[in-house]
Length: 122
Image (spheres, one colour):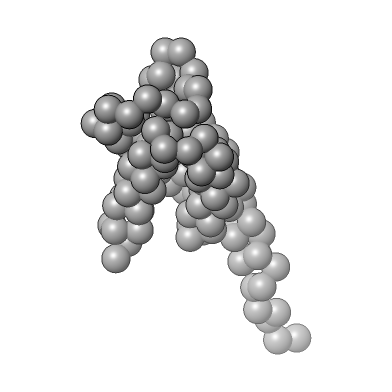
């Protein structure tokens, strides 16, 4: 299950987002923006530390961005939204922001775990 969540989900989500790039600009921007941001943050929450969350976020961001470009290329549709030039910069951006969001999610969990530590008996 962890392999599916960590690998298949960002790839499928990237492919859907890439298809939306050729269908509707608003749908693409919604998937790539706020929904993608939530996904990156919540992926980080699954890890016990900020560095673990950042690593997960970077990998997921890489997969997400790459599959946007793959789906866009395979669809053959004209883009309804603009991508950075060259388009491979999208992968760099999604990897970077995935790492940052995963870091923040992991940091949140790390802090929650420290705050929820049991108090030793006196």
